[in-house]
Length: 197
Image (cartoon, rainbow, N blue to C red; front, top):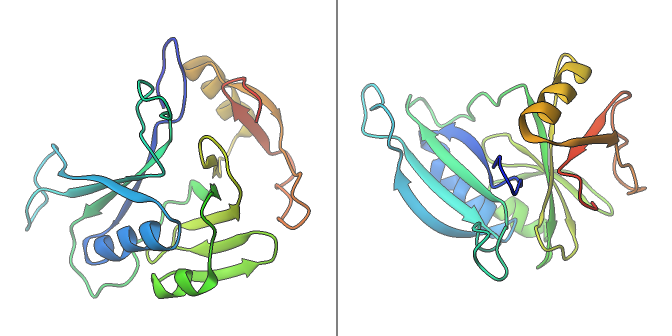
């Protein structure tokens, strides 16, 4: 998230097992319709037993606010070392799912072909990426296709205060407008930067 005169969610970062890094990129590209905007070595400490961690950046358009059709939130996929047998890495318990409006359509065949798993598909597509990250996608056109990031927290009120104070976010009741999607857990709150959702 950016903090300052203009607030917006610029990017989410997903860590994946190094053995699944390319599979994860393929999923977001081919099942969700994003495009790779760049691939970098992460300028952080060197992983034990390997090289620098890699990162791929994907988006539906430009992340920058300077572009005419910019301000599209991106997904950064970082490879973490560890080798192993290629089994999915441990997904953080905080992230519940990422919700996307996919402007170009979602196809069940592409979800499976890209190594994903379809959990539910009626009115929207609830699926898992090759690393186990949950994605809730629906076919719709929005200026920024990243609708929201759902996170699990121990204390909703404390988290609400933190995001309001740190980022200037505004809290409201969770939106449950999609009759085909599961309802938000009781006590859930929606935090935005105050604009129309």
